[in-house]
Image (cartoon, rainbow, N blue to C red; front, side, top):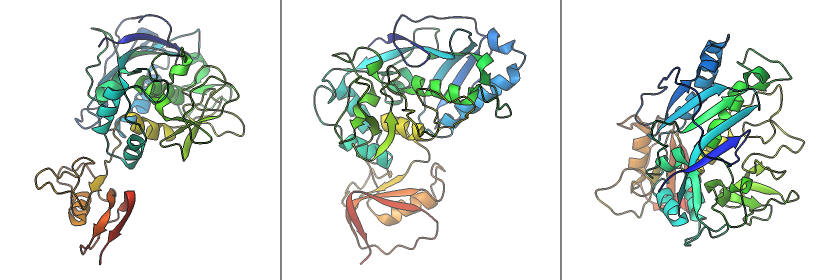
Length: 372
């Protein structure tokens, strides 16, 4: 499938074809790990010739590093940055179209966290999506993380982010109460580039929806997909609990609500001058949409009988508690540091287990009984 051109000015709107602006000034790979997202940023001359270029690029790189330290998907993302003067920030990129069934299938193979498992369990097996029955469109990096062949046009980046540096505090050392945090604004735009957005910013009548729309619920726990400014909507994994309230006040429906009283967050529809929020619930949302958080938990299912494929994943869990605990304590690949999370699928185990390292043990699908 071909990517759909998309232009998001200020937030996440889709309007016109791809615009490839400026020239390559500097490209730098931020990560060499094979088990993490890798950003390759390009800074245009409007940034590299700025009097505070070093500070600006350091802040942008530090924002991208947060995602690379939190997600294990082996996806390389090319991003172009430039200085603009017309709006606070902008994003130009493409989107990838697919079917709801294809997305659901891809998501099933990405179940790793407890949030993933709960979210997938609440996606119905229907041909059309449960929101409006149509197809889906998603960010190119998210599509690639899910295994789709979704690349930008030849010689073009995954996205171009414009930043009005004149209205931003360029580092944590700058605290002008009338300006916005560059770190937070970059994080906000990267969230959209990675897939946090709603199709309600376009035509909500019959068009394709974004993955985030599949987790848009009202206060009663029913799916919500409306531009009614009086509606109250939340991002939720299963209808309850509500992770964050979503904006309903015209455009930017994929962003967070800022109705007082309000604590500033990165993905707020209306950012707060002088505030400098960092990523929080946004990382959990990206995990649910299809990315894989680090460190990855270990799954155990006492009824799993395969003698060969037992890797501690959701689809191929360990069958004994001892093996699960051992994987967390002494993971031979060093992918799971000591003190990780053990997720037990409902069941009963009569094993004797001596736990010497700290770990979090939770259950999925019902209670689990350990011991005699």
